[in-house]
Length: 146
Image 1 (tube, one colour):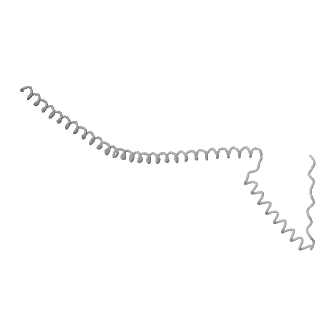
Image 2: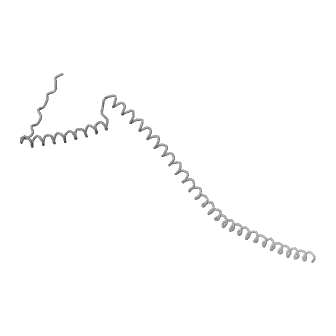
């Protein structure tokens, strides 16, 4: 009987121990689930924080890049302007050495021709009024043979 009691005691102890182990395993499982849920909550907050910081960094980077582009564009424009000026000066010198009139020369000659044309018309009109005859066109000159 002692053996039976020992068996019963041991079976009751084993059942109690098994219940205790089961309860501990259940609590461990629930603690793991709670930790997982907490990590997910914290993870989304961390994720959102990282996104915000990334947006701020991207904004600063865009601004810095835009400033650099503006600076480089300004430098390039200045360089192109200087290069264009050098080119224009060299072309002007080459044309001058070939005897090609400048734009200013042509404009001055155009003004002078206009002034002379007006003077000729005034003189022609005045001569026509005085003599009563119409002005005759001037005879053409022949070019001298070379």
